[in-house]
Length: 529
Ligand code: FAD
Image (cartoon, rainbow, N blue to C red; front, side, top):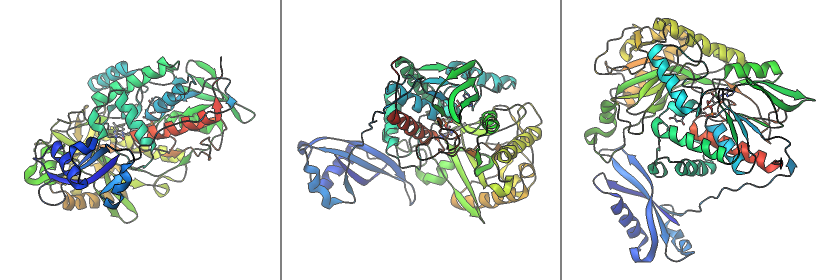
């Protein structure tokens, strides 16, 4: 198959014209090919009126004829589709592997193990999807937080109430396996072709439940409302796990607990493991009108039906720190993402249609040892202190502190709500966000926000609102693993996903789950019992 790249067409042209343009470039007619389809679409809005940039996949009629197009490189390349295969291990596992956590990392690890015949036992501290959704909505209405069923915990993990963005900076061929699996389980077809694919929280939830059902159909077991509470270790080797419902013997444990499992990290410390601190970022959520963002990005073409909802990613270096936006949710809403009582944490999500009035994104600044001290407990304590301050500044009841961007730049603590209605579900309360952060961080964020205005006009417009604090940007800890992906502290333990410090985002966490499962499957073989 050939990939014909960089076909730049005006917004008014459709996909058929992109295919025609690809064939023209190859000097081929429809009669000479076996098929052609859109492989990727992106938008280039950097200069003047935006254009759509297509990559078209062309299947030639004659097998092996691709080589004769090598001279067309780099605008034409040969696509060799990667196939995913797993070897078979030899050491018999006496007990099924245990997978702890049903976020993307645990879900994909369990799926791959189940497909390899291992019948994994999955532990998830939170409830299954339907009950989890009720609990989250109940919290939004009542302000009663369930510490095991919230935006961080429960079936699907942290990204369930998300924008479901599937962009990742890792270039692992396993990303293709993850995308194909999501499609098999009902993700919208367009994720295969969009340069910046997203599923949306509504569609993602069904995909997760469908994958869980495949795990069950292959003999896996999933225990909801069941937390890992301890590890059984004999002669320096893992022999089982303690859970809130009793002990389970096992020789292998995939630990995919995400970045918010602070009690689990504490349990690891107490068991003698050595989680290490790692850098992360803190800040707040910015909200603007989606229409204003699109006017800045797309100019007079804003609102054209051929254009996707406008997205941005901004960054600015301030000394050794980086201030950047991430997890941008076009047409989305800010979520109340606390998992511990009397703490406020923000994050963002959107539905597949991305049709809300506001755009939101995290605006954060990097922090490291120098800010919180060198060890993992101190890193977590630093996060907690900020979350407690945010709770207090919001006035209680999980109301979040907020102020206008301009007010933050001037250190005024004022909130005047006009066209941008803050979407944080527990309501907002005017507060000086800068006073909640160490001075150096607040000052870096001010410099960064001012620089963003030069990159995206209107970023500091008077109506724009900041809501805080955003502290769960990535894991504050790393559980170091050796070459075979096992913990360097405990044979049999496989730290996995974001909580272990080896992923950041839905796709990279899922890929890490696949890699860990593949490592286990290529060393062990399931017992017959
Ligand atoms: P998690 O998804 O955190 O899953 C860990 C699971 O382990 C949880 O279900 C938890 O309940 C369970 N668990 C924890 N402790 C225990 C225990 N002791 N016993 C049993 N179970 C336990 N990323 C993107 O790529 N795109 C996005 O659009 C996006 N939006 C986001 C929006 C929000 C609101 C949030 C919170 C995150 C978002 N992210 C997004 C980040 C993404 O969700 C995470 O990077 C990803 O979910 C990490 O996957 P994971 O499996 O490693 O951990």
